[in-house]
Length: 401
Ligand code: BEZ
Image 1 (cartoon, rainbow, N blue to C red):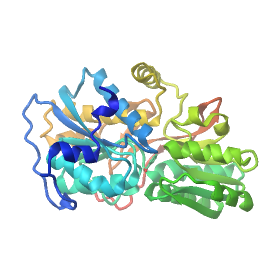
Image 2 (tube, rainbow, N blue to C red):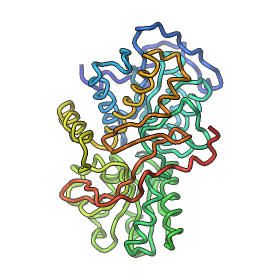
Image 3 (cartoon, helix red, strand yellow):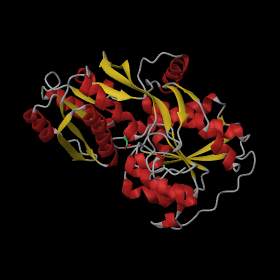
Image 4 (cartoon, protein in one colour):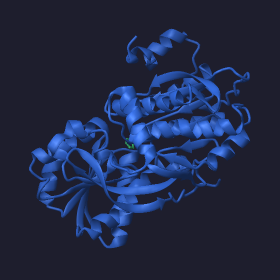
């Protein structure tokens, strides 16, 4: 059976499970927590994009999570695990229904997901309404660990603020006083650009224009022409996955890379370099990972990921790997008894993960505290060239934990 055969897409799932499903808006119900017989496998719902512009990101998170579990003999905290997968297709409009299916019908114990900030917002709301444990292995939406924070909602990735605010000072200090921004018009793009602007204007910089296309559109030509007309000192961009590949290639093809340097959140060049080729050389980004990080954990992880998948690991694989590591810590603390919720979340909150990215701990909103690296694409690698922020802690604005 191929990997894609294992993925239950929403339409197929409806067919398989019959018409007894929950209706949209069912997030108002509180689902009963499944009774977990000791020794029964823990049911992990993987709600990720396995198709579309973020499809590769979801697959790498999935592989990273499974790699960690395999390294523990297929268990987390000594407890066997069983997966239920759903392809969320990065569609916010389907997210509530998809999450309700996992929680209400499939009765998963934990949900791990997702990539897209808009989809994650819907998942957080259902997780809060149903008291379901949720571990977010990518989506940076600030609210998840800010105003919507909850003891049972964790993130092993980053907040949109955290990755981009440090870039403001980096670009200003590099001599760029007038900068244009470009992104997709949705929560992650907006929040990343806002965070960059917060750091950049505080340093003394001026944003000359904010440009955006709807998600997941990849028709960039008109906006690239606009950048050529504006002639800013530099450009700050957020795109990821297939969109990042296309944007970087279009930007270089327009001949702008030499005259108007391109900077961005690290997603612009992570997991994309093979497809971007020479067009990505010289791009500087900030992220909580780099390809050449020293340290035994990154080396061991990178070798194991390559062996398992035949592909180089990236930040998405690391975030999936660390989601499993965090659950392992929580489950170990309660000897696999998932019903012991309070001591389990206390152990997760106090966790110190020796991640491939470097040391990770958690703040009051359950968001990682971590170093943000400055990287440059050199010979097809995201090479660490500095540290843009040491132990950067998202302010968790609005979190009343
Ligand atoms: C987001 O929507 O939060 C996101 C998607 C891809 C990469 C990084 C962030």
